[in-house]
Length: 108
Image (cartoon, rainbow, N blue to C red; front, side, top):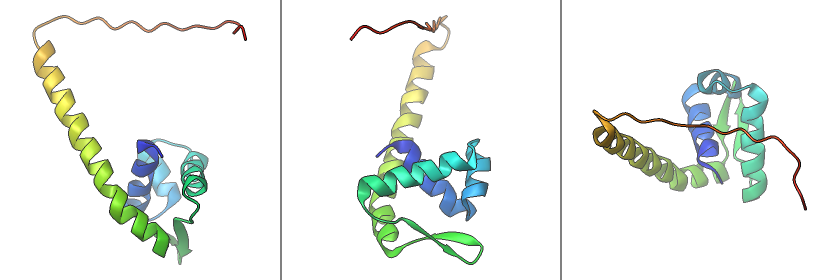
C-alpha cells in the first residue's frame, strides 16, 4: 500500500469519478485505474462500484477508507511540518541539489 494510492482514493471520493480525479492529480485516467487495481489486488477486496454516473465505495471499501484515511491525514501533517521546519532551517542559506542520471548495464 502506498500513499499515492490513498491520495488517489481521496481524490476519487472528492471528485466523484476516476476521470475527474485524474485531471486533478495530473495523471492519465489509466494511472488512476492502475492505482486502484493494485490496491484492490493487495487487499483482496473491491473498493469502488459505479453508482449512476459516479463512483462510490463498496461496503468493504468504506471500512477500509474509514481506517486508512487517518493514515493519509497523519502523513500529510507530518510532511507539512517537516517541510516547514526545513524551510526555517535553510532560510538565508544557499542550498544546491544535484541529480545524477545513470544509464548503463547492470551486472547480475
